[in-house]
Length: 332
Image (cartoon, rainbow, N blue to C red; front, side, top):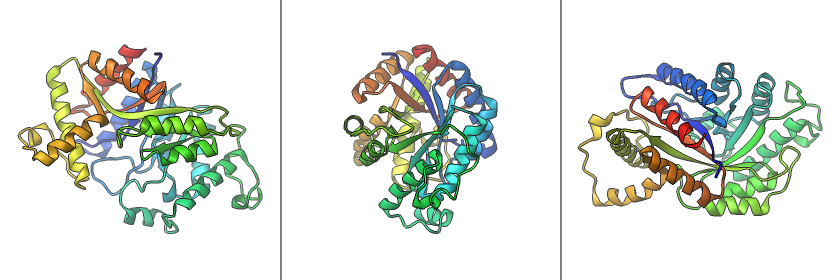
């Protein structure tokens, strides 16, 4: 299999560090993966947390575009209900004008944090699922300059007016957005790192129901998962321990805790937590290079995708960059 690899950067902040360092690391990682031949670099939108720095993907993408040459850049994703459709369309048309043929608009409908923050980001947000569908339609109409009620039959334009559009991708973890992506004729990205079960069915449903659109004539699907690899078995073991603790911690609603390996190394899991770790283990692929290559290849085959988006947390900047270097050496 000729597997493509891409990056999901959630701009993680380490204990003892801060947002400035996390964003500098994102710039370094974007430069590196651009040089290594990764397909795309997506950044996420999160709010009201001290552990992640990426509240505004469109701002970070503007900087990353200036630091890279060929890699596609996008959001993974813009949480569409947090924003007006027109503003999202203008932001990404501007990015597309700056970096032609390199911009992806990945969209989701989760708040990217808590509902209170989402409401303040967009006071008109009703949390009605139908509004999400309306917004997708509006963004498409703005991108293609198709007259519709949303743009007063063409009287309102998302500027700059350009002859090409960003690619739109729907993000899904439940599988429901697979039907949405198929209906609107946009790409589908399955979040294996959120829900490790149901991806194959979601992607199959998407492919079977896909309706070509003005901007996408055939189905396009990929899947995202947490990945870490190292030649050091000790680093692999430490990374697995940190991932296990992190995922259980998030499940308990602890989104603002910063910790390192020494803080969690002696943590004793309850029987119930041990059961949850079995579930969470399917959300990541962590191992030595040969192990990771085998598992990533198998995942791509199981999901019927030719592109895997790897999200990596690591104890140090160098460990994180080295993990992506190894991934490139395995597949490129």
